[in-house]
Amino acid sequence: MIGPNSRIVSGIQPTGNLHLGNYLGAIRRWVKMQDEAQCLIFLADLHAVTVYNEPSELRRNINGMAAALIACGIDPDKAVLFNHARVPAHPELAWLLSCTARVGWLNRMTQFKEKSGKNREGASVGLYAYPVLQAADVLLYQATHVPVGEDQKQHVELMRDIALKFNTDYDVDLFTIPEPHIAESAARIMSLRDGRAKMSKSDTSDMSRINLSDEDDAIVQKIRKAKTDPEPLPESALALAGRPEALNLVAIYAALTDRTPNSVTQEYAGKGFGAFKPALAELLVQTLGPIRERLKQFEADPAALEAILAKGADQAAEMAAPTLEGAYRALGLPRGR
Ligand code: TRP
Image (cartoon, rainbow, N blue to C red):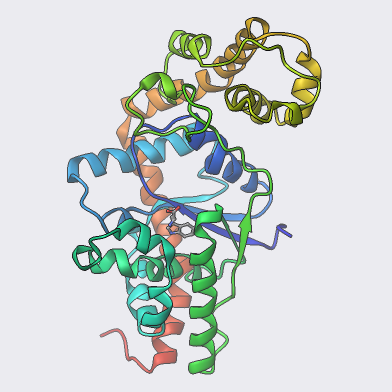
């Protein structure tokens, strides 16, 4: 269980075009957690460069994502917010841990297999070693829990194995063994044009997603045009099986109001989308409007964001230092001048 003595570490790769799916997925979960436990949240920009990223675009995405996290409610006075390229302890510990991690372990990582595809020989060494850096991200801070999606569970298991082997090989009690924390009811937000495809920044149709930067009239328009069916809403959300577009709109409404899909269908039972869509659009405008305005403020004042990230990096570096020192010491490596 997560409580005041828990320490939570989680990262997200900086990407552009943040949308409703990102907000109702990872971001909102962190916003809630920052009141329940000590949280460190970072932009995994060193992970982003495991594949080619256009440098000026990467830079923009790092700042844009940091601004979006704060606009969505991550409070830099509650959670430590930073980008890990500013904290050299991350790649330093990653090197030390890469000497503990076994090639056989990394060979089993399904994400590397997926991301490298048919061209494994042409993938970067960084992409292969990616989970070792992820282990360092977490182990540096003695994290007790790592909130991640199902897709990252294997990486958390790997960091546990690395921590355990290091502690055993060098006979130290250095690393806390972290637990994965998988959300039970993670809202999976789907495309507004196709209820079977995830809402995605790379969908060619902008009508398929609601961007955090969308103006109110665009939000209203996108919900009005969202694909649905002519049937009214049923009493029970279970009856939405086979109606993926209808289910998605109900799921969005439920996530925004912190209710269950069932309580939403009960309220709107018998009503069609002519009644439901305007209510959903209104709710979205109320939630996303203030986020969009805060995002604009950061765009107008890049120095404010820079100050927050610099402070976050200082805090993170200070928190990471004892563990990094401990790792060098355990290995018998002299440091300093
Ligand atoms: N690999 C994670 C993802 O793609 C991002 C990440 C990097 C991360 N370092 C982490 C997540 C440490 C949790 C903890 O989603």
